[in-house]
Length: 439
Image (cartoon, rainbow, N blue to C red):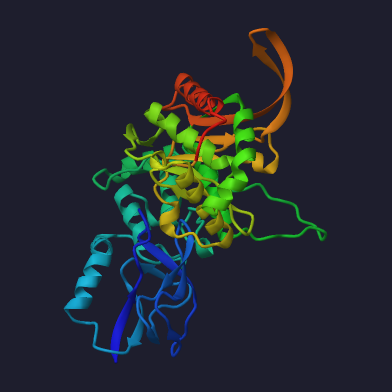
């Protein structure tokens, strides 16, 4: 028999820890290769960890609700055959968890030097990552305890403390004296909006419903975005008659050949990707006083979860996909979202987001920017409307398929000219669609 250590894998950019939600296997249970053994939750998404080997579970090293760092051993599986503790295993672990081990060492160094305790006097738990940020930014334990957490059991997450700092708090370095710190604290009290909600009257006929963990995260993210970015909207109407006719003509043939249903979404996503290539300063992020111009075009696509919440999976390098590739990517991510099968990497790295408010019948909307991006596009419902048709023989009234697209952008870095030209480019891309296009 051999012992195999199941480690918490790396789960995407900026994710350094996860919370154990539930064990799917108990001590003594057999496990197959790639069979899920534990369900975890990060600040981004819930996921399952599959086993890399076949065998029997002999140890579970963490309890439900424990917070685990990337790279830590969470369970032991006994396998048949030679021990996997030799050079072969060392090579495997090195390939898979080099970055995780580096993160662990960084966290250990922080723990050894930080002046903030892991658990506060009131009993609140703060993860190593949160404590590291607090120490770096000069956030005291007293301040930490005032931050409203959106994590499991109201735990303060990385996003919570960063939002707290960005909301107006001016941090003080440890080299400054106490008097300066107290002066700054008085300024902070004036600039930070009150966290105390207005009391709500509840009577016997009302039903109190606890927000889901995902709901809390979304609510927090939306408020943070509005507090961070100066939102401005531009709107434009698009004639998509040729696209509607083309899709109606080829949808059955497309499904028969590709095994995929084609909707309007991949066509719209292609038009957006092309417009971003023409206007790359839409594809940016803001870091303090610096602008980060993104090298890849990764389109976020708002999708519905089974519980009614929305999540934004990401189509990586969207500008490199043809229509068939884009259709497969859109359908795959939408299906994963509906079945709750999205992985952390599926929602990482977005540089621009598109949301389809028209799927709910809305003509247009004013979406909130998905931070740290600087813009988001809303697709309105496609409708039959009377329209003026210009011909060489004069103008006529006819029935056309039209839709509105709404563009919300961060006016700190995107001015009205760029925001307007960008959606005008999308309009031109869509209206230039050739009804004889081959796929």
